[in-house]
Length: 140
Image 1 (cartoon, rainbow, N blue to C red):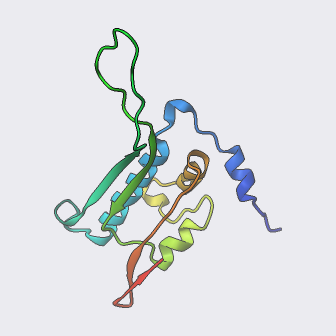
Image 2 (cartoon, rainbow, N blue to C red; image 1 turned 180 degrees about the vertical axis):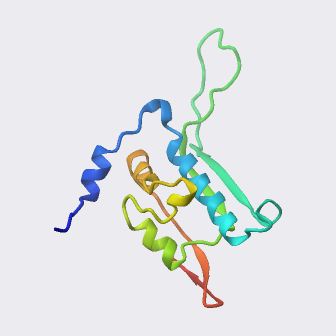
Image 3 (cartoon, rainbow, N blue to C red; image 1 turned 135 degrees about the vertical axis):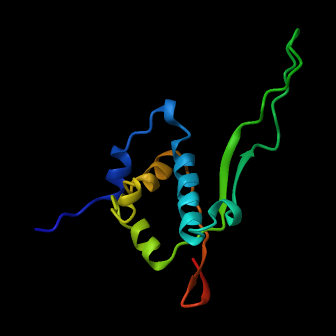
Protein backbone atom coordinates (compact mmCIF):
# COMPACT_ATOMS: atom_id res chain seq x y z
CA UNK A 1 0.00 0.00 0.00
CA UNK A 2 1.34 3.44 -0.91
CA UNK A 3 0.31 6.49 1.08
CA UNK A 4 -0.25 9.79 -0.67
CA UNK A 5 -0.24 13.27 0.80
CA UNK A 6 -1.79 16.58 -0.11
CA UNK A 7 0.52 19.56 0.35
CA UNK A 8 -2.44 21.93 0.60
CA UNK A 9 -3.98 19.67 3.23
CA UNK A 10 -0.76 19.45 5.22
CA UNK A 11 -0.40 23.24 5.16
CA UNK A 12 -4.02 23.68 6.22
CA UNK A 13 -3.50 21.23 9.12
CA UNK A 14 -0.21 22.77 10.26
CA UNK A 15 -0.77 25.18 13.12
CA UNK A 16 1.30 28.25 13.86
CA UNK A 17 0.11 30.01 17.03
CA UNK A 18 0.55 33.79 17.10
CA UNK A 19 2.81 33.31 20.13
CA UNK A 20 5.23 31.47 17.82
CA UNK A 21 4.93 33.81 14.83
CA UNK A 22 8.70 34.03 14.33
CA UNK A 23 9.18 30.25 14.23
CA UNK A 24 9.33 30.18 10.39
CA UNK A 25 12.13 32.77 10.50
CA UNK A 26 13.86 30.67 13.17
CA UNK A 27 13.61 27.63 10.87
CA UNK A 28 15.24 29.56 8.01
CA UNK A 29 18.08 30.69 10.28
CA UNK A 30 18.63 27.15 11.60
CA UNK A 31 18.71 25.85 8.01
CA UNK A 32 21.38 28.45 7.22
CA UNK A 33 23.47 27.48 10.24
CA UNK A 34 23.23 23.79 9.29
CA UNK A 35 24.27 24.60 5.71
CA UNK A 36 27.30 26.51 7.01
CA UNK A 37 28.24 23.62 9.31
CA UNK A 38 28.00 21.23 6.35
CA UNK A 39 30.22 23.39 4.15
CA UNK A 40 32.80 24.35 6.79
CA UNK A 41 32.79 21.48 9.32
CA UNK A 42 36.13 22.50 10.84
CA UNK A 43 35.72 26.30 10.79
CA UNK A 44 32.03 27.25 10.62
CA UNK A 45 32.47 30.07 13.14
CA UNK A 46 35.40 31.56 11.25
CA UNK A 47 34.25 31.17 7.64
CA UNK A 48 30.48 30.99 7.88
CA UNK A 49 28.33 34.04 7.16
CA UNK A 50 24.64 34.40 7.92
CA UNK A 51 22.66 37.61 7.44
CA UNK A 52 19.06 38.23 8.45
CA UNK A 53 17.32 41.31 7.05
CA UNK A 54 13.98 42.64 8.21
CA UNK A 55 12.01 44.36 5.45
CA UNK A 56 9.58 47.10 6.44
CA UNK A 57 7.10 49.28 4.60
CA UNK A 58 8.69 52.36 3.10
CA UNK A 59 6.02 54.73 4.38
CA UNK A 60 5.33 54.83 8.09
CA UNK A 61 2.25 56.11 9.83
CA UNK A 62 2.28 59.62 11.27
CA UNK A 63 1.26 60.03 14.89
CA UNK A 64 -0.61 63.35 14.81
CA UNK A 65 -2.49 62.88 18.07
CA UNK A 66 -2.19 65.56 20.72
CA UNK A 67 0.23 64.65 23.46
CA UNK A 68 1.92 61.87 21.50
CA UNK A 69 5.10 60.72 23.26
CA UNK A 70 7.17 61.75 20.25
CA UNK A 71 8.45 58.31 19.36
CA UNK A 72 7.43 57.29 15.89
CA UNK A 73 6.00 53.79 15.59
CA UNK A 74 8.07 51.28 13.67
CA UNK A 75 7.00 50.62 10.12
CA UNK A 76 5.12 47.40 9.43
CA UNK A 77 7.28 44.35 8.72
CA UNK A 78 6.64 43.11 5.19
CA UNK A 79 9.16 40.27 5.03
CA UNK A 80 12.52 38.79 5.86
CA UNK A 81 15.64 37.74 3.97
CA UNK A 82 18.04 35.10 5.25
CA UNK A 83 21.34 34.68 3.40
CA UNK A 84 24.16 32.27 4.17
CA UNK A 85 27.30 30.95 2.52
CA UNK A 86 26.55 27.34 3.34
CA UNK A 87 26.56 24.23 1.20
CA UNK A 88 23.36 25.17 -0.69
CA UNK A 89 20.57 23.11 -2.22
CA UNK A 90 22.71 20.22 -3.35
CA UNK A 91 20.77 17.38 -5.02
CA UNK A 92 20.49 15.56 -1.67
CA UNK A 93 19.35 18.72 0.13
CA UNK A 94 16.82 19.48 -2.61
CA UNK A 95 15.39 15.96 -2.45
CA UNK A 96 15.01 16.35 1.30
CA UNK A 97 13.40 19.79 0.89
CA UNK A 98 10.86 18.34 -1.55
CA UNK A 99 9.99 15.48 0.83
CA UNK A 100 7.46 16.19 3.57
CA UNK A 101 8.55 14.88 6.97
CA UNK A 102 11.98 14.04 5.57
CA UNK A 103 14.32 12.23 7.93
CA UNK A 104 17.42 13.37 6.00
CA UNK A 105 18.66 15.52 8.90
CA UNK A 106 16.91 13.62 11.69
CA UNK A 107 20.28 12.83 13.27
CA UNK A 108 20.73 16.53 14.12
CA UNK A 109 17.21 17.02 15.45
CA UNK A 110 15.34 18.04 12.30
CA UNK A 111 11.81 16.84 11.66
CA UNK A 112 11.42 18.01 8.07
CA UNK A 113 8.45 20.32 8.68
CA UNK A 114 10.07 23.80 8.62
CA UNK A 115 9.04 24.50 5.03
CA UNK A 116 5.40 23.93 6.04
CA UNK A 117 5.69 26.73 8.58
CA UNK A 118 6.97 29.02 5.82
CA UNK A 119 3.89 28.22 3.75
CA UNK A 120 1.57 28.85 6.70
CA UNK A 121 3.20 32.16 7.66
CA UNK A 122 4.15 33.80 4.39
CA UNK A 123 2.26 34.74 1.23
CA UNK A 124 5.39 34.19 -0.86
CA UNK A 125 8.68 32.38 -0.33
CA UNK A 126 11.63 32.63 -2.70
CA UNK A 127 14.70 30.44 -2.41
CA UNK A 128 17.82 31.03 -4.49
CA UNK A 129 20.81 28.77 -4.06
CA UNK A 130 24.28 28.27 -5.49
CA UNK A 131 26.14 25.04 -4.79
CA UNK A 132 28.98 22.98 -6.15
CA UNK A 133 28.24 19.78 -8.05
CA UNK A 134 31.26 17.85 -9.26
CA UNK A 135 33.49 20.90 -8.84
CA UNK A 136 31.20 23.06 -10.98
CA UNK A 137 29.09 25.90 -9.60
CA UNK A 138 25.38 25.23 -10.11
CA UNK A 139 22.24 27.02 -9.01
CA UNK A 140 18.55 26.66 -8.31
